[in-house]
Amino acid sequence: MGLMRLCKLPLEKQGKNMLLTDIAVEHTLVSKKDGVRQTFLLHPFTDTQRDSLGKFELVRDVSQPGFKDVKRSTFVSFHQLAELYAKGLLDEFGFSVRMCPGKGTYPAKLPAKKILPTSIKPGSSFDLAVQKVDIAKPATRELRTALLRTNVQI
Image 1 (cartoon, rainbow, N blue to C red):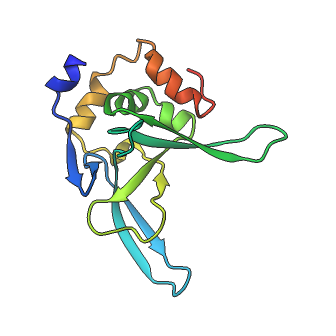
Image 2: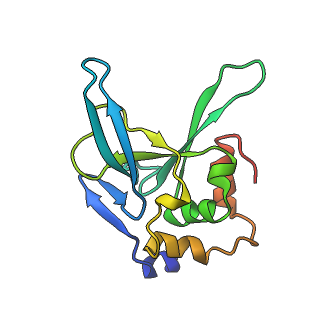
């Protein structure tokens, strides 16, 4: 917990959410009504609800034989998100990250986007956090528990 206080997280306040601006993904939304195209620059953002306050939402499609496919989500901290990137687990298990625009408002439900490591600003605080992860160490119990909600065991 002391480590969290020492690190200045690269989050910018936007309304009641905090944006991780070290990651940016361009997204184009086409209106079903009139075909108007809007392009947004999206960033991961922290949740404002009590149990997931200050955490990022990960979303994953889960399919099980004999059951309808469903989307499952879980919430992870800044450092857990960095660990997932460092270990390649977001890509391996098909996770998307819930995103919101840095400017303006998004006219629909906020999308979850797959984020490639190339979307992380090189040399940024988040990039450095990813590089500092010891990939040889096993994941913490908290991270393993969070991922179990999406049917992922590491």
